[in-house]
Each structure stands twice: as C-alpha cells, then as structure tokens.
Length: 414
Image (cartoon, rainbow, N blue to C red):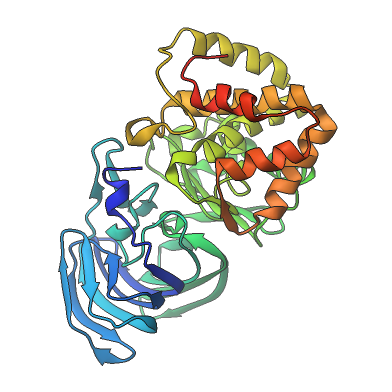
C-alpha cells in the first residue's frame, strides 16, 4: 500500500509491550496520559503520535532528545531495546484521512469512543501504527465515577477515589495498534454468558438483551466452525449515539444506538463483528492489501450464521451477492484494492463469494478443516493471502493457483 498507510508505522521499530495510563475528563474532552513502550529498534525511533502537548519524553528513565510534528515523534537512539516513556496532554484530534473520514478518539454527546481502523491510533497514544506490529497492552483509564470504561482485554482492577474511578484492563494477547480501544459512557452492563457482556445505556437494556440474545450461540457455532474463541472475553458496547457502522476492536465491538431495534434487524452485523475476533484480530494482517482476509471472512460468517439459524443458506446468499456484484463496475482487484478501495463493499461481498466458491470446490469437510487450520496456524500472529492460498492448496488435490488469481486478482467477476 502507498499513500497515508505508507506514512504510518516504521518497519525498523518493534514495540514489545504497551502500558497506557490515561486521565479523561468527559465534560471538557481533555485527555492526559503516560505511555510506556518497550521498544526494539534498529536505530532512531519513529513513533506515530498526534498533536498533544508533551511533558516528559524519557528513554530508559533519562530525558531524550526528540522532535514532534507532522504526526511523528522521533527520538535519537543507537538501536537495541529500550523503554520509552511519553507524558502528554490535550484534546484528542482525529486523524484526518482522504478516503475514510476522521479516525480515532471521538468525543460523543456524553463520553467518548475510539474507532481506530486503519490509522486512527495516534489520535490518543504514541505507537508504531504498523498493521503487522502486534504487542500486549495494559490500559488504565481514570474518569468521572458516573462513567463506565470498557477497553481491550480483561478488567483486572477498578478503584474509586473521591469523584473519579480508575479502570485497568490487560490485553495479554498481542494486538495491532489500530485495534486498541477505549469506550467511555454512562453504561449499564448486561451479562449474556460467562466472559460475554454488553455495556449499554439503561434506556436500551431490553432491546439490547433481545438483539444480542443469540450471541452466545454464535460464539459456540463459530468456535465449532473456526476453532476456539481466541481471547479470554468478548465485550460489546452500544453507544447512546448513532454510528454509521459498527466499530471493530480486539475482544470488543462497538455498535450505535441505531443498530438496536428490538427486532434483531441488525443481527448480521453482530455476527460480522464477532467473526473479526478470529479473522482480523487473532489472525491479523501482515499487509493492508490483504484486507479481504478480514472483511471477506467476516462477511461469509454472516452467511454461515444465517445458514445455521433458520435463515437463508449460504448458497442462496452467495447467489444474491453474485447478482449484485454483476451489476457493479468490474474494476476492483479485491486481493489488492488500494487505499481507496479497502472498504469498498465489493471487497466484503466478493471476498465472501470467493470463500463460498472455495467451499464448493473443496467440500464442507475439507473447507472447514482449512478454516480451523488457518486460525490455529496463525493464532495471535499475522498472515497474507499467499499464506492462505498455500494452506488451502494443502487441502486440495487440484491446483488452486488459477482459482485464487481469478477470484482475487482479476477485476472481472468469475
């Protein structure tokens, strides 16, 4: 990928661990933080970071020489491993993009959310915003006590002092920066099953309980089809604001109030976001050009849920998708869609259709064995289309090279 994606992240930098301590004031929108990053670098360190006022910048506990501007924090360093500490404050500004709008930390009517995909993470913490650079996180957020905080991982501590409460989450499985997230709002928690809960405004409690009521069954089905759920918990947040689309994060999904209607009218989105925990979060991308590995798989999971929940079978949904795609321009290579096409609906639909065609070619037994092998082989790591094609070939007697070339690289619909 070129353009804005190419300007984010540094291949010579590897962050091995993040520890973020944040203080957020909902009334003013002010965020102050201390970020501690354990870094391995081949030379000078370049991190992605928004326009905050910097307090201290330390390397191994000593003041460091640095420059900060243009979305980058650059530190002098001879190479090797070190601990970088950055103290900062300000009002988070979203990362403005040409194709995807404003990304990152967003102030809501009453609280905040983070929508980081693909390059919004620097709007709230310094990071190596490279999709293949994954690390464990500890995220601590202090905010006014009426507010609840949901972040990635497991809540390991919550303590109240005076008028504020501190929430501490640990995400031990490695995570790409764009999947790191914090949600702040006046939410009540609804438990769906052990390790599964929804945080939502009290006024939506009944509708949320109904619309997400079948999610535990989804988890069971996807564990059967894709392999064990890859994280310790799964959080859903429903904001009191409307959102254009749900927001993906690791171990978490965020829906707008407009995605809750009390009739399960958006249940396909519940399935889609859940499936990303396997495809996109545990098995991450090594390169954004392979985004179909995230979105095509999550879209196909919608069809599989329909097939197993008394809805139309995947074959019917595939036929409908193919008819829609046939009416659209045949000018997008979903195996390398470019920045402008990364989130084009054709990547989602044709990606899912590719998987259905592969299922028909391999047969159900080999196809679902392939999916479980895929999530096991690349669990908590990253992978490419070439990796998937190679693994699929291992499950096929006939050569699959022409199949993948036709479906992923030829703009014309097969």
